[in-house]
Figure (cartoon, rainbow, N blue to C red):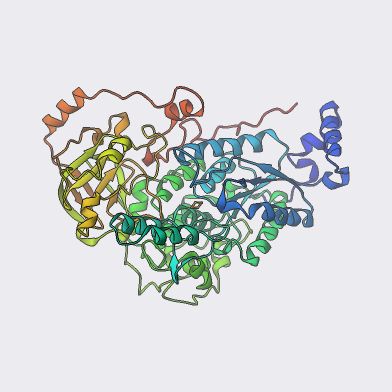
Amino acid sequence: MTSNRKKPEELRSHRWYGVNDLRSFGHRSRTAQMGYHSSDYRGKPVIAVLNTWSEINPCHTHFKQRVEEVKRGIWQAGGFPVEMPVMTLAEPFQKPTTMLYRNFLAMEVEEVLRSYPFDGCVLMGGCDKTTPGLLMGAISMDVPAIYLPAGPMLRGDWNGRTLGSGSDTWKYWAELRAGRITEDEWKGVESGIARSPGHCMTMGTASTMTSAAEALGMTLPGFASIPAVDSRHAQYASLTGQRIVEMVWTDLKPSDILTPTSFDNAVTTVLAMSGSTNAIVHLVAVARRAGVPLTTARFDELARVTPVIGNIRPAGKYLMEDFFYAGGLRALLAELGDLIDRSQLTVNGATLGENIEGAEIFNDDVIRRRDNPLVPNDGLAVLTGNLAPDGAVIKPAAMEAHLLKHRGRAVVFRDYADMAARIDDEALDVSADSVIVLQHAGPVGAPGMPEWGQLPIPQKLLKQGVRDMVRISDARMSGTSYGACVLHVAPESFVGGPLSLVRDGDIVELDVPARRLHLDVGDDELAARRAAWTPPKRPFERGFGVMHQLHVTQADKGCDFDFLEEKTATGGEPDIH
Ligand code: FES
């Protein structure tokens, strides 16, 4: 960070507005056309408010109002706000998966910031992939940027029971399939599980990534935990608008904030909250954009020493609303003590340590003390072996403990359609000890690495009372899910990874304590299977999907596009004249 304040003529937007030539005449006259007098923008930072609001994103319903509060803050601080809609990624609606479009959003953010006269930006996101998508684009452009998290929705409610996003969907769906609840009761769950604006209020990808963004130093302190409908959320939106203007004058950019240590803080935060496994893919991608070589192995190293102290579903008991009342992320970070590096700079110009100073826990069952954790370590584990040479991921805190070490016969499905057609077949040769394998669910093959990783338990086993079994795929899994699901197997089966060679009846060994995933088939037999393997036809023939299948990296590299991972020497700034 430079210590000097910028002068108005040093603003990036000066090239559009401040010079006297034919083009700048056009910029000013067209701004006047929109009803602005030159005193509205002359010599002021132009702030893009990148808004992922849309009528199909239930998690961002309140952004239509929040953007006005952000703009109010920008005006107050002497900036010129410009709302810029960018692609919404609405987790429940976008097919085949929002993950296919995370990089699309990142590209859009980068190009919007590059091509328009913006000096800084507010990033408005929250629903799962919006957080990494917005951050990745802004980091690549490296103009001052501050993140505005959507905030979690209120607790779900049905017949006196508290419902959690996703987790209770899977739970009651299993109960319905097992015949333990009625269709009417299922409809009651449907109407009560999501009852306010805001992102999923379990420790899904949204809560995980917004908390990670705060731990990275990219949000105002305490913001990520505030429920979407709480009036303090609106107040923080205004403060965020105020703050970005000052960040422009002091030239405080993502590259001043994001370091290997700030990413360690984010990873530790995710682990301490038993966050979504998706955070691995996203944080690796975000870090690589920032020039930080974060690896999946680093997640495993930090997992071994990080206690899970956020008692939030699905690994724990409570929801994000409870977490906020218990002290929120500031309290959790303070409790983590020496596991967090407090020297890291954040968007408000203070260090993380200064921001969490004095934070208190008000309910130490929701945010556990370090000496009374939910589990002492291993919130996530990274596995390797001949079935996953570049790694795979499992969430030991959210699975039945007896499956941590397991040997079983593979029951293989060649793709999702095959699994949907046969999983509930009474004749399927499967038992509680079997290992269910799904192929072709990775970044290229599915396409887009959907959240199919919580593979369904066959109905006949559900009726016998089976609620967890070992399942393996190259897919991701919703952070609201649970179970002994091995995910992100890399390289994926569609491009010839060893998962493509598994056959019915093969013995698979899972050993989480040893971090091992092994296919117990001889090397000669595997070589013969590999020689007989032929690459399947790629899924896309046109559009963005073609770019995706040509350039997406594997899960251990973050599934970014290979041509966007690295910074270029110039940052790609155009000569606007
Ligand atoms: Fe938007 Fe879960 S559906 S965060």
